[in-house]
Image (tube, rainbow, N blue to C red):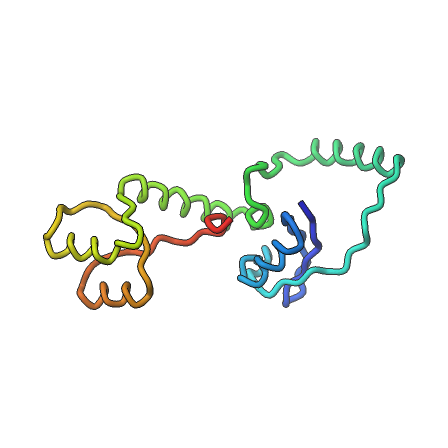
Length: 163
């Protein structure tokens, strides 16, 4: 993991952790990196001095790390994606709620994949039993379903769904 000092277009500075430099570039290009202060997606890496470790520096850092850990009530879980760790607690909690809702909807439904428009029509027109389904549809297919009066709801694409 690489820690970058970041700055948004509005001048807010914050840190972010990424698996690699390419990962930061890819996520920033897709506007997945967000300023935790204002939500701005135009984020750049700041110039950072390289971290050179000596035995004295390692010992001091270890002592400081122990002292900081004792002062901080909770560290982010290791399983939390890096972009969530940099997120304000309110947004992180909302994202977790969205993830739980999406999971509950998917647990009680059948994944029909790319057959979603076809299956939604069969259910709507009574050609098959009514049941919960989910899958994929293009924007054109979704538009056609809406024009036919077929009720559907897109599931949110959450940040760590793409990782």
